[in-house]
Length: 213
Image (cartoon, rainbow, N blue to C red; front, side, top):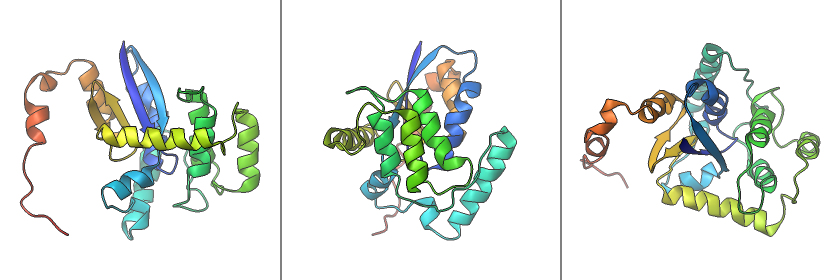
C-alpha cells in the first residue's frame, strides 16, 4: 500500500478539485491518505510570491480555468462570494476536528472544501461558519492555542519537505503539485518506467540564468 500526504488550503480551487478527483484518479490502486490543512499564504511568503487571485488578470484566468476543469470533470463548483479570503478559521476548524497529533479525516476535509466551493456563499460568513462547526462537532475549539500551533507546525513541516503550493501530494519524498499532477502521481504509483531513470533528478538541476531582486 502506498501512503500519500495531501497538503491543502481551502482557499485553493485546485485543492478542491484535486480532492474531489483523487478517488477516481487513483481507482484500482492500494493507497492511504493523510490530509494536512496548511496555510498557503505562509508558503507564498516563504518564497516572496503573491497568490494567483491577487494578480490581475491572472485571477480572472484562474477562475475561468477552474470552472472549465470542473465542467470537464463533472465536479460541482461555484466561486465563493469573496476571493481571496482569510482561510484561517476553516483551517483551524479542520485541525480541531483531528485527534491530537493526528490529521482530519476525509469527511471533515470534504465538508470544509465544499463549504467554500459549493453554493457561492461567503466562506467566512459567521452563520455559515457556525453551522459548519456544529455539523463537524469538533472535539476541540478552533481557537485553542494548541490547534493554532498545530496548523503552524504542519505548514512549516510542509515547507521543510519542499511543498511550495497547494494542492501538493507527497509520496516517498517526492512532491506532486497541482490538480494536473494526478496522472503523474498515478504513473509513479504504478511504477512508470520514467521514474526508474535519472530523469526526475536531472530535470530539476538546471541552474537559473538570471535572478530578479
